[in-house]
Each structure stands twice: as C-alpha cells, then as structure tokens.
Amino acid sequence: MSTVIDLFERHGYVLELLACVAATTWKLERQERFAARLTGILLAEACFTIVWEQVPHNLYTESLRTFLLWSIAAVGIRLCFRIAAAWAVFYATAAGTMQHIIYRGAKLLQNAVYHMDRQYWAWSRWVYLGLFVLLFAVCCLTLTRRLHSRNLGTLPGRTMTFIMVGYQLSMNIFVNLFNAFSVDSAPRIFTTYSVYDEVTTILLFFLLCEILQRSDAEWDNMVLQQMMRQQRQQMELSKETVELINIKCHDIRKQLYTLGSRVPTKELDELKKAVDIYDSTVKTGNETLDVLLAERSIVCKGRGIQLDYIADGAKLDFLKPGEVYSLFGNALDNAIEAVTPLEPDRRYIGLQVRAERGMLLIRMENCAAEPLHFVDGLPQTTKGDARWHGFGVKSIRRIVQQYGGTLTMQAQDGMFRLVALLPLK
Image (tube, rainbow, N blue to C red; front, side):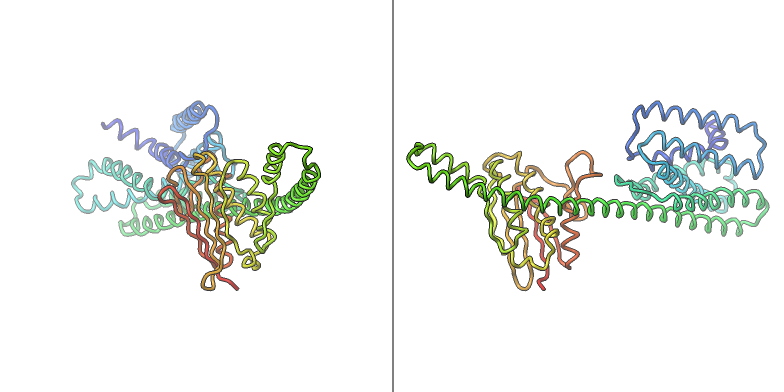
C-alpha cells in the first residue's frame, strides 16, 4: 500500500489533473478512434513524467512542469473531442481549476486534522488521498454539471488568453512561489494564504461557468435570429404560393362547371373533392395568420390530420408579421410533427385565438404519442442533435416574453397543450 502512496505523491498532480479532465469533458462529442487517441495522450503524459524526473527540482522547473502537463492535457482534449482549439484550452483550464480547488481544500482539511491530533501525522498522506477522493466526488456532483453544454459557440481568443494567463499566474506560478519561500512560515500564514487561494480558485471556476453560459446564450440568439430570417423569407414565399393555389382552384372550378354533362357525375364529384383539398382560403382578420393557416391546412389534409381553429386574427395587430408567422408557424409545425405518426383517429390539432379580460389568449392542443421531458418549462427535442433542434419553442417563448406575456406548456393525459397570454394594448 505504501507503493500506491509513493506513486501518488510523485505523480499526484498528473493523476489529479487527468481525473478532472475526465470529469469536465465526458459529455463532449468524441472524435473517431477516441480510444486510440486517448491512449496516445496518456502515454505522452506518462513518458513526459518519467523523463522529467531526471530534471532538477526548483521553482522554475516546477512551474514549467505544471505548465507543460497542462498543455499536454489541452492538446489531448483537442485531439479527442470535436471542439475548437479555444474550447480545448477552456476545458483544460476548467479541469486545472477544479483540480486546484480539490487540492487546496484537501490540504486545508489535512492541516486541520494535523492540528487536532499531531501524533497521527505519520498516516496524513492517506488522509489527503481520502479527502481528495471525497472532494472530487462532491465536485463531480455539483460543479462539473455547470460545464456541460451542447451549444459551444464562438469563444473569443482574447478572452481565453486572459483566462489562461490568470490561471497560470494563480494556480501555477504563485503557488510554486509560496511553496518555495514559505517552508518555515507560521501555520497562520499558511492557512490565510490557503483560504485566499481557495476562494480565488472558486471565483475563477465560476467565471469559466459564466463564460460558458454566455456562449450558450449567444449561440441560441444566433440560431434564433437566423431562423427568424428564414421564416420571414418563407412567409413571403408562402403568401405567393397560397394566392397562386387559390387562383388556380378558382379557374379549375370554372372549367369543371363548363364541362357540365360531358363528364360523368361521379368523376366530376371526385375532381371537385380533389380541388377542395387545395382550396385554402382562410379569413381570420390577420393576413399573415391567414396565409399560415391556409398553408398548414393543405399539409394537414394531405396527412389526414384534423385541424380545427377559431381565431380572431384582428387581435394580433400589435405583433409584427414575422412574429405572427414564427409564433404560430413553430407551434403548428411541432404539432403536425407530433401527430403525424399517430393513429388516424388521434391526428388532431386545435387552435384558439381570442381576447379575454384584456389579454390575448392563444391556446393550442394536440395529441401526444409519449410523455415529454421538460426543462425550464420547455419540452426537450427528441431528435438526435439538440444543438440544432428545439429552437422552435424557444422562439415562441422569446416572442411572448418580448410583449410581457406568459407561456405555459404541459403534457397530460395523452395531450400536449400550449397556452400563451399576452396583454392587449
């Protein structure tokens, strides 16, 4: 057992850093041949550690060793996962910060154990190892979940440079300086510095979490803006398409009327029914909603979906046309996608738009195949890549909140319901 402790003392930083890298990156998308790449990085870390044992130990070599081990970890993250170089530096810094939080916390607790009972100092190395494992488990359950994201946007290189320099100064150079020049320092000085070091490290970790959350928000905003632009273009195209369909249906009806008795009645009725499928004139009082409902009605008829709507579109005048198209378009598209695979008798979508007590009520419901998983009040996408999906409901919530409204979504008894309330001006 002493061999294990000796190995941990000689190569503890490497083992701790690798454990923290694994804890902070295990949800990232992996590269092809991940196992081979990981094996190569681990061999590189091991070879470097063995070779470095021949180098004299002093302040400068210890600082350089820490930096090089961290650099190998950053390169390994870049090679093993599908992320940009800046994000590899980010996650290496996060892993190093987590390692230092655990290391400093374990040292403080180890020192407290020593002052409580100094005769057990002989097995204090086991105390540190046990404390590290305990604090590592606590950090995995609390801190690392803040670093898991599927929407890694663009990370400015300047931001990451400042973070990396701050990390190296705080957790590498200053620590080695303190260790080199405070061998005979009083316990109170050691405790004061250790507490300051721990607080600084925790603040740096939460700064990294804030950067990640801001990147998530910027990614969502970018995708939503792009989606809104595409929907505005689609709205113009849909308007032209629906108008053209209605004109053609009107012309075909005239031609069918002129045919008269020259076509058998049964065939004539079938032709009229076929024309009715594409006759999609809708009048709600809002031109954008008319176009949208007309277009989606054609889709629903083609898929055997019953679409019922009672809409006072005139109450939507305070919304921009693009917002009307995005709000109702995303809601209807999600509903159509949800009911299409169901049995024919469950392919139902209902929509209501009306004024009620000074509020605009938008209510939509549809049958649901299976229970949905909700996060932050929004149903989560069931598609494979959440990075590019799930923005429809985010767009709906964004528009509703923009006008001071409230949005609720719930799934119960095999039905999904969306209710939006917006104050009428």
